[in-house]
Image (cartoon, rainbow, N blue to C red; front, top):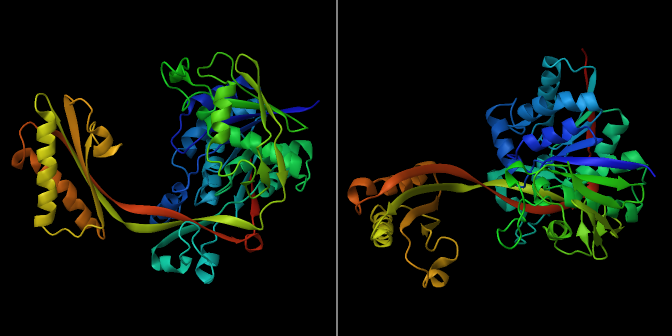
Length: 449
């Protein structure tokens, strides 16, 4: 029976590059998929594109393609990625430039567009935010981006057109892996059972090192070998949708039933109704079986018709955050850090800074679990004060870090390592729109020798 091997080259924008090179050079996969677009990433990319029309794609795109393209071309591996972010066309041009520089033509690059629905969102007055029920129109001029989650179809079209590299913007994560399975096996787009099985594969693979032991590791409880050389996962998939999850032999990490179970549960709101643009997937009957060392078989996913609506990720400006940090160490570190915190709190009141919200945390003491749960913890030898506040302007945000830095000479003894930052906040919410308002398009580019 025909089997298709998919490898994950990245699970987020800043992921390591070496595991992808390892997969490409091993040469025993057919597709290498880079999933690099988180919810907030595309809004930040839209801001970058506003500043520079040639920007707005993943900042590591060129480095990644330069690292893997030679081995991928040599070994007949096609690349699929959402590193196009807010500017897939510019990303395609950048990849073409890398290929020409490396002398890798002829090659065909496909660019998928249509996910940017900012114009549609601005024109509709009937949409509501999924998180709050408030009207989307309330975001008004603060709206930075609106990107619909596309499904597998345009990627399938690109592969049918002979694309060696497919670059998209916002696409549902599992769809990046589902598309080559539909293309290779000729699955019908409405064969919900097979589409559900392919979506399970994509869901397990989308976060790269998570399923091969990275996020899973917990020393003494869940030990994972050689995490510094963590190998990214490979899925061996049959025409019936059943898959074996594995990795390159000799690479670090671990593929086990437990790692696959944890990834299966990741970000799944309802295992029996996991909504994607391609299918309403049902993972409630999934079976996970260890076949041997670093080999796990997954099967049993099902599916039903896709939702009538598509999710849209909305990025909007939500003010500014100013932050300052300073450390105290040695005897009395906690008392000095507490005094420093009280000084900054009073200073913010004295200068009348209009704060929308503020946090004053002692890192190593109460920054994560709060003062109640941390009350009985032993006193630490070193403590770091972090003050962060949300403001309406960048100038106001900068004053927070200045007050923390002022503790060098105006606060308790022994403060050191002060840092300060101020930046715009890009927040994310979501809405739903009818899928017929979204029109994905595929654009082909030829790279000649």
